Length: 174
Image 1 (cartoon, rainbow, N blue to C red):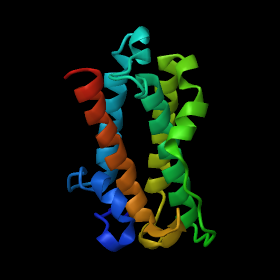
Image 2 (image 1 turned 180 degrees about the vertical axis):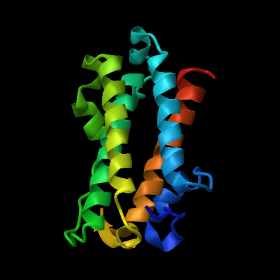
Image 3 (image 1 turned 60 degrees about the vertical axis):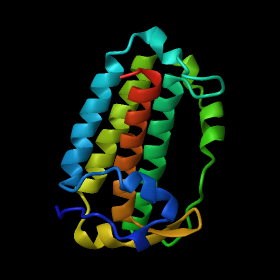
């Protein structure tokens, strides 16, 4: 299993630099596993009623944030799978606000959402651990922009780090 090194700036859309820049250097697979455990510990400690909390009018609830994280990791994981397998089909973008609005997270139990997020992370890790160096470096198109499997792995990590910080700072006041 090769190391998934930090992607170069030509491996992803400039928008994603905000996430990739949050990821420290080191073993990305180990980091994804550790930060997944950290996120699950934080979320499992929340009382069920806290899942409905919004830090401001019009902002997502904690449940919706968790649903969004699972959806986004699934999308990025599918993109990574498709590109790693050499599929040249351009992959579509998605509108996160529409997905959250239609995702029904507020009607679900926090425990179920957290269990789902944990399973999505396990699937992401299984996929990434099974890729060789050639698959990790492979390029494809997602949302109209060329991207590598490597970059998608780092985006997954950075996206979670972003939302962990938002949860701590804006939702939990930590």
